[in-house]
Image 1 (cartoon, rainbow, N blue to C red):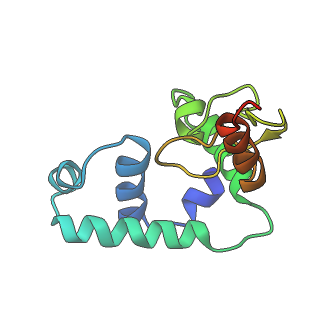
Image 2 (image 1 turned 180 degrees about the vertical axis):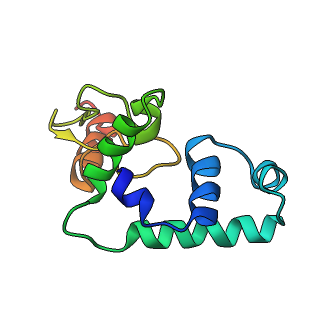
Length: 128
């Protein structure tokens, strides 16, 4: 992770660390660095662009693990956006394990549309 952060220019690295690791707002980072909010957004975008560039050494999953190891005080579950211990959910219909698809909104209950439809039919089925 240190290698990846070292590839980012110092101003962009400062904006990235303060916003994405220390969770400061754009205005707080601007005040800390003594620059405008637009400059902070531009520097952060530059850092993210550099980090997103494909590299044979770092893929996204390894990046997340390395970042947590690099920053010992970071809560890994908050960083990953899912609980530790696998984080896999089970489908309410077929009990198949699946990962969380979206980062926002309500977590999915079913692994597929077919399971969702099957559960709906089971709930609405009229007794004969």
